[in-house]
Length: 142
Image (cartoon, rainbow, N blue to C red; front, side):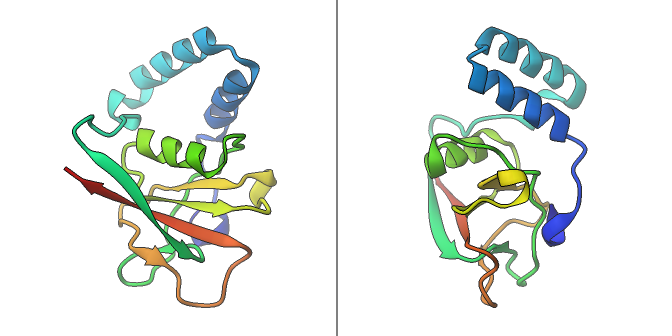
């Protein structure tokens, strides 16, 4: 979703897994995830190692790199568990360095967007507030 609007080819997969979670079809969800790992590789989804403590630092506005660059996000997630669920999604996504939260909703009503840019998120943008964006940067300490 970089630059506030690009496309991601994995939207159908995200919608399928979200619908399976919402419907309680966890056995089907396990099959879909297992099949996707065969296609994209097992490193696409890996939770933080148990020895790591994961926390997040919150900032106003959308997430940016150390140089202030807007970062690529995924296509977003419909969440019923609030920011805690969004945080768990980031924890489970390899390469997720932050998540953006839009309480009022944004693209397709999503509130949760995972920052998946090769450049790590460092802080929230210092410019004018974009929508009601909140950036939560992942901090990992062993």
